[in-house]
Image (tube, rainbow, N blue to C red; front, side, top):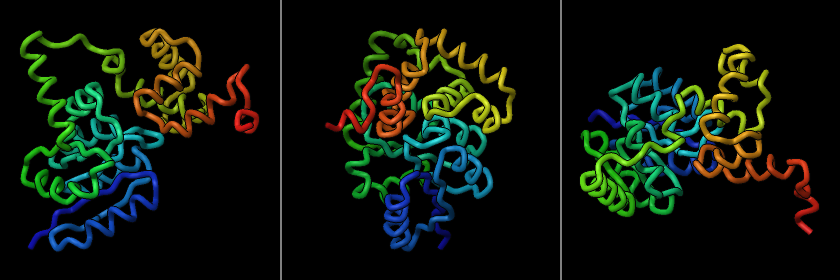
Length: 239
């Protein structure tokens, strides 16, 4: 029997190991790799060509949305299953556009994960019940009212989204340029374009925006924002 090959993309080691144990207890599923951040997930997917990538949406360096978009373009045969704590309409719409074939809420992932992987392998889609309802509501609204206006997040290019995340994670221009193999001037230009598009004109604002979109985890954003001038430090705020 040919097993379903799965790549796990999750930055929390304990969660990733738990998923591996759960999946490898199944006779028809094997985990072929584990990625700790979104960029590594893209690299491993193009090398390993897994049947399914289980992708956490809040990944460092490259978030799950952008990683999904790159994987589905570079490895069309691989299906991506998103894991997220978010279930609002914008997330569902963006991930559908990025090419995700499934979307599970983390609260119910353990119960549905194996079934979802098998359905994706068959060529089907799989969504948590709450997500399915939102998708249905969204498409009904689209049919009735026409296509909704594009949101600011959808106007960002893939490279701009990458730079937004790295800026929000506190990376300086030099480090971002090295990470993306571009010049510092290119990073500066993208940052300025980001601010113009989003009408946000400081790093703290970009960080909040990325946090609200689920591009970075709340804990990381909180540490960065605590260093913003005029704000109390984390130690002082705790009292």
